[in-house]
Length: 265
Image 1: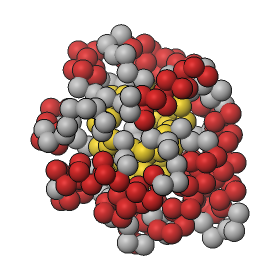
Image 2: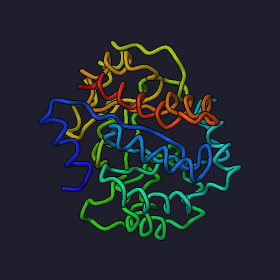
Image 3: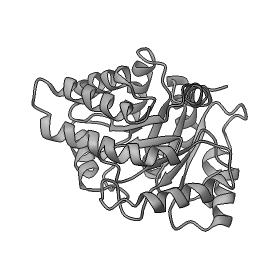
């Protein structure tokens, strides 16, 4: 079993749901980012989504757009995110998923990206703008041992037959977008999410994690019974943005992680 499979199996035994946390690598600075993420992992994240800052994050809302801009200004890049992954792997054993758009990976080189990410200790990648039909170009050089996962996205508008195709070529877990729109937007409907999860479960045995628009522990608690994990991103990045110059930023994020995790037990 890889780290993702092991983590979900452990959580199932404990009757807990996974807290998946997104943080942009390099926000607010490269050194501060490493310390913040390390603290968040130790505070209770079950899976880390390490965001690769990109200049045109079309699927992301204003909060994460600004986090990417801050990180890029500080010199963040895919290369440095992979280096950060290697350092984090020395500090934590939780699964690490690289979260990126396709352009930085294509520019880096598809085979070198796979080789270097795996060597650094990453467990997979989620690529926001890579359609299912185009992903073979990326994965054709991957080994078959299932030690590096391509996390697939499923939208609330995805037809059931397409869900089946996407799920059939996925590994690790499936990321179900809770609603149309961009990250951080409001207007969650728990009933809609429940129905989307039900439809997706009918075509897969993989864990299903729900993200987009989940901003409070109360939101997470409402959705947790329907999913295997909850993805939090904009809420963490908003804390970083609002308190980036405060000496207690680490403690604020640790408390925020603990509160979200408590809502999933």
